Length: 309
Image (cartoon, rainbow, N blue to C red; front, top):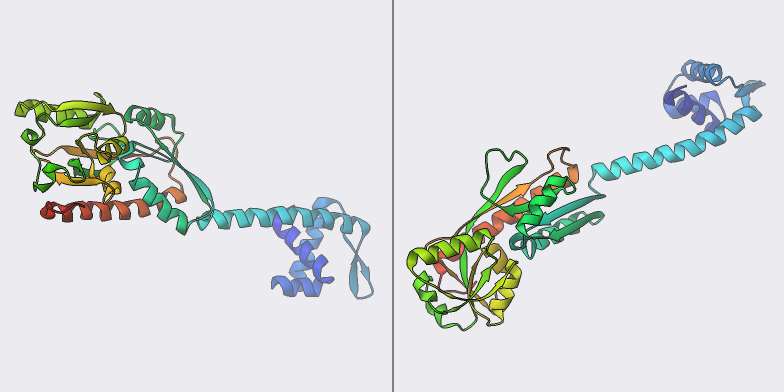
């Protein structure tokens, strides 16, 4: 018994005759008759009996047709599901990220993506760098974002973006008049720092040490968005990724270039043990468009260092 035989049987039952069933399927009458005969042979059921020049379903044929209708409802549902998936109308996307990208940048990307594909469920978990690395090893995600640099052995990781850290100041701060900030400018300033195992913190500490400068480490915290909030509320100054600071533009935060440069690399992780879904591929396309726009905005802002972003 095969699907073609069932389709022919259903067409004959719906139209009431071999001739009409053949026209519905765009087949010849002999071809339809042969399919019905083969179905009767494999099913061991007498499905039709001749009445004059036409046919009439037997009680067995009618009972079998009821089961066929139920089966075809399920098949149509499968076709609908397949069409929905292929057109990105459904699915689930699981993302994990460090705060620098996960607090503002990724929500903007996800918002844009969700407007285009409203039936795709997206979950975003913002974690520490160590937690993101742990989660990416479990395969329980579709995309992960973590700090670099990229090592040759990390085949499931790819470079996502490179930026320079910027100095962030409360609105109206006396250093806001300077076109760029140097380590010596921050001598004795209340400083909001990242925790000691953070890659940005390690670079900043080294730059200050090389310059013989010791800022007043006022507060330590784990997430870039939290650092920005502290600064915006006047608790001190800091050096963060422009990806994190951009979301506070015009909300009590002034951004200035910092020299020497703090180099920040970001990586994108994908599961190493399963292929990428079509939904993930489409999301990555939107993601990279937004990334390129953000990087262009950062680059445009550098020559205009006297303006708050």
